[in-house]
Amino acid sequence: MSDRHLAHWPPGLPRHLTLPQTHLFHNAQVSAARYPDKPYLVFYDTQVTFRQFEQQAEQIAGYLQQHCGVKAGDRVLLYMQNSPQWILAFYGILRANAVVVPVNPMNLTDELRHYVHDSGATVAFVAQDLHAHAQPLVGEAGGLQHVVVAAYSDYLQVPTDLPVPAFVSAPRQAIDAPGVTLWTDMLARQCVPGPLTAGPDDLCVMPYTSGTTGHPKGCMHTHRSAMSTLVGGAQWFARTQDSTYLAVLPLFHVTGLSGSMNGPLFIGATVVVLPRWDRDAAAQLMQRYRISIWQAISTMVVDFLANPRLGEYDISSLQAVRGGGAAMPKAVAQRLRELTGLEYVEGYGMSETMAATHINPPHRPKPQCLGIPVFDVDARVVDPVTLAELPPGETGEIVVHGPQVMQGYWNNPQATADSFITLDGKRFLRTGDLAQVDEDGYFFMVDRLKRMINASGYKVWPAEVEAMMYAHPAILEVCVIAAQDEKRGETVKAVVVLRDGYQGQVTEQDVIDWSHQHMAAYKSPRIVQFVGSLPKSGTGKVQWRELQDRERAAASGATAPAAGIAG
Image (cartoon, helix red, strand yellow):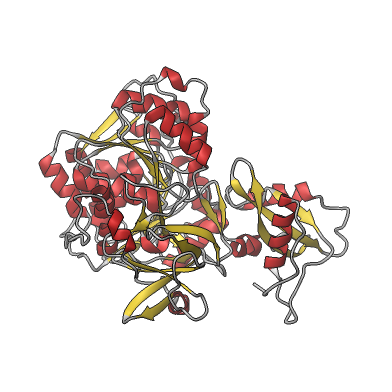
């Protein structure tokens, strides 16, 4: 790897980061000892101190061990929106020496079933409003045995004038269903856990990602790899115990999990939690709690700056606005700069790397740029075929070696083998992302070698959507591609061939509606196009690249290129 980027390294920071050789729960213990009465979490004006957080996480761990049979290394599902319970459950699972499997709360029963069966989880923490999706999995073969159901309103303990969504304020309900324990009943038992035996090289968290084929795959992260990004992010941005974070990025995703939850706990900072994006609530919280750090995706910033009431709020406490997932439009970055004096600092990472491998130097960010490799990361742009490193300005695949890279995919040795290469005696992850490096050593995204669709910052994998759409009785063939969308950046489009006898009986809107009922909203196709046939290679493989090229050409008014390599 070239060292050109070192000329722009953040001043005062070492290039090597010595990581704590501890379990993540030790961070909760240390902060509780240092700042026992300081609020770690703020949820619609209700506060949870560091001491309370540690105590409740211990009680959760004891319940898991004594009443659910959770043993060291067992996987436990976490399926809810951002909330105190999400964060408490995460650390309670870790304190039980178990492994967290965070799941997008937009997933429905059929999608959830895969996470349960693949991970082998028999226990899940589920939000009250999502319980109906999880309950069918209780008691089925290979399914769940215990479900802890949490009502968000249990952590609304003081009056608030903030806009509380109905799903948050909904009162706790008694649930008479097999395997169910209410969150409040769990804590009331005041269980004491056994010893903390897991260490830095034991599995910690297993976020799922899809890749280009088959079902979502679990990314195996140890306490050491999770520690790398949580400590690295706090150091890169020079955060302290007196920082205050707005946690509105979803915590099931590694960016929010690492930067807006784990990092603040490590340094003893306060986290103000929002379960869903609300631009007025965000601005109110910035003013009320003097928010200094806001992690956001570009669509959030666009909506925030478009708020006609924004001038009514004092957001002068902001010291950093950072994020990634999709490039920030120049005009929006300029508006943010004019309003706050701050540059939007972008970074780059993936589930396989537990968040960032690249971040822009805060003192010298470049617009629409992935940034530079962070502490101890060797990142290169290589020819995807020969794997030779390419010079500045040439497009190739990003490969990364670093302490935050996963061990591999859970129970999928072939996918693991396909995703790693060895260069100069080091193990590199193939990201599947195409980029260029400029003369300063900054990385810029060009395209995706993989088929991922980036819809409002959510990663959508066409093969997964296609597999689910084939369950529709009218669909003979389907190919999912990205379509341009003014608001989402990219949106999901399905090109469909109907079975004989369904022409004229099923409409494109029917397929859209059916898809919305059977999969998470962010991955459900917003556009469906019926065609007579799909382009295929000589071996019968659908040429998705040709369809994608046609879509892009139509959007730009250009002529689509001829069919290329079969995808």
